[in-house]
Length: 483
Image (cartoon, rainbow, N blue to C red; front, side, top):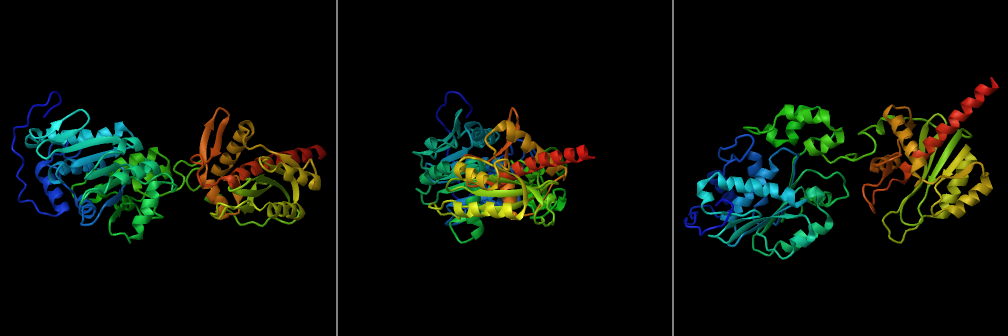
């Protein structure tokens, strides 16, 4: 029925008595017999379930499965499949079936509803039985409802879904997922089905569930992952077909030229995440994909070599780093102290203090630039022991100083004008850095407030490189003045 005042449904209920008993088989048959593709490839034609879609349905609706997660790149028909399963649930699901479609916001949730509405309207048999409202679908013969909801905890409470579809799990928070799981499982065969591209960070609900699914030891959890092979190049078209089933299936509805157009216009880590289904660091990263790794070099810093040190410290449970840089731009990690996961852990200040003294003994330190937050007393002691002109405070929260320093290292990395020791711990801190635009230029920050992904060593590297460049320029001017 179209929008507007709803009359009484006069059409007799569909006779589905000859349908198979299995959950997956019932849904496959209904979709094949009654649904029409509403747009795109095959628009106006019967909904043609491809083999990979049948596999998803067969796994998600297998006996005993309560939660299903499908990780798949964009443009592989996940929203359309979600809409088809939602409509099928109204007819072949439980009595008084309740289908909830949860997305990042109400607008996104309404996209699935819009596809579902169109599927109903394109088949007169369904259109005369389903009441179409602005915000939901209702099937009177079965007292079944399809309702789109935003991913907000308050919107999810009080429901009893037979099928709960979570569109784009990668944007869902822990609070929303807890709300989702708290309302599911009340019925004998209810299912929570999440379909999503990978998240931009391992610090996410989706990554936790992916790890759970990869473990393969939970029979109530179905997991299917479509992704290009690790280590493939972004231009490998065979890898595209592995990660994108809609490109490799019979009667494909995704084209190589469309993927190639996307590859040319978005950053590589974003392309790998969204179009190859890979879990990558650097999707929102400060540095381009692979740029830091390309600057690794084997080099030994010589005893008494002229260097700059930078210190970024934490007072308690964060990480503390001491990074060095030679005057010709070679960065290395001199020391790092990180919380091993113990909430009672505190930075071993005596160890840090000893490491600073040892660095001054080992090298000819032109300057130690230290962030004063939480370490002012130690910095004062270092200045007394090693010289007030050589130990200086550098406030990393000062955007007027940090923005140009950040840009200096960015430019050096992207042009390979800097080298580093390849330390995996420093590389991880660099990979965690997200660019934060300011009027003075980009700064680096964590991906979100309170994130466990530390960046202290990267901040120290930025400061060390900037001060080493300054001292290097100063030395060159002095050399010219003596000529």
